[in-house]
Image (cartoon, rainbow, N blue to C red; front, top):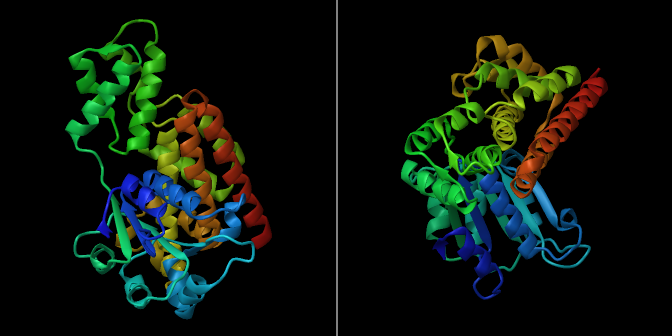
Length: 346
């Protein structure tokens, strides 16, 4: 079965004879990875409440209790229907636990693994691409040419034209993450509605520079539980280039980083050593904040936060005109959760 596209995977899941026993979905675009995972879950489970038939785990939780994966794989749902064992943030450490399950003929629940982009040398990726009982879906970023063609189609479908210089400027500002690119282009289209042609001035007005420092301040305020700061930043950043899914994307990247740091702590590293580790690249002025966040947020709560952000990204895709309301509600909700965690810890 090996390598396939997302649409092909969903089609195979409809046929019990073709359906894989385990699925690996990896890529740099976390919102896209999450969306495909959600499609897989909905295809497999039959309960009206998907959470009843889905077990969310991380690689660290599985590796720390080796027998747990097979128990989850072979367990029967109390509520009927098929179950999905969804493991996030996986890496090569999971390979030796997955391999015997794939090698056996024993029936069981679907194992769904999501992670960031894996290199061709990854043992986990090699296992899924070579095993007949597994499927691997890689979600790659678009090339500049592919991005341009897609955005041109989106603009043309709205009844607008775009000047060549304006397109060049738009691409300079644009993120290669699909969700962010779509969000920013839809904002531009809305701004230019009724005028016929998008100009350089239009692009500059909607897709101007954004301060990375402001985004760092925003995500730190969210995960520290500083509601007043979050409210203020939402109002100021909401009009910038990273509004809507752009802001949510930045928060999602922060969650993924926190998950990686929390995993290191579970494996025995101290918080201080993790925030100073070169691999995470934490600016020295932010280390105190990250230390606080790691004391407040554990792996389970970070997985829950990831689900909320990714769900919000999907909502902005469906309702781009409501970006401001969606981002405000989502980030303030996470900030309230952080404040409650801080209160419980103290």
